[in-house]
Image (cartoon, rainbow, N blue to C red; front, side, top):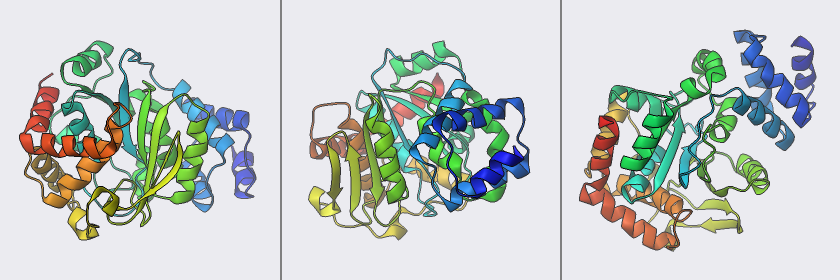
Length: 328
């Protein structure tokens, strides 16, 4: 372990095979907390190479619990985190909005590490019971349109690094890998990224897969479509730059997207928005992210999907989806 860390500290990259074998050693308890912190420091000084990302993600997927949900044409909506913007939980709200419009969502998420509140923190406060039971997850998808895969259940290896990540309180290599580790491997992905260079790295990664994807990055640093600036989108058709004005939306002041100071406050904001009581700015941002996700699943334009999302959020449909999700 010491030799590999020294090798990496010299800014030398691993091959895909070396990277995979390196992370497979997580399951053999060869890493202590100091070594995990050192690994995080290395990849905060440089981004992993494409080959390293492939190897690391392959290892962690192999170490995860298998789940077969391939019968569903589902999407995962997720961000890398680590943008230090303290916005409310936009991607999680977008998931429920997409499900309310008849699509299937397999959300993969965790507790907060580099942000105030993660999706698992909210679900825990709402007393949603995390499960790995395939039967229950399929029932949620069939009856509600959304299920949730809690990282620490499906990716037990990552449970070992959670405390170190929480203590560090900054983005790490695991922020980069997290969006690639959904154990159900859904066919579609909307991925928000906090850094342009990293967005391009994901773009190269997904070009070599059969996934239907959109990778979005707001040019002022948000890991989602924040509408606080122009944003870039990478998909199978290439690179696109959009301004909020393109969708007839005025740029939003970042202060309008601020989240709360703790999990309780962020859960209250989550419930307000999902109940149709969000501000115009909150509703707009959630709807545009949902629109980009919907456009991976249907033949409608982004503008049409945006209108559908706005209407669904105001109608109370989304709140009903949350209630049914929590009841199963």
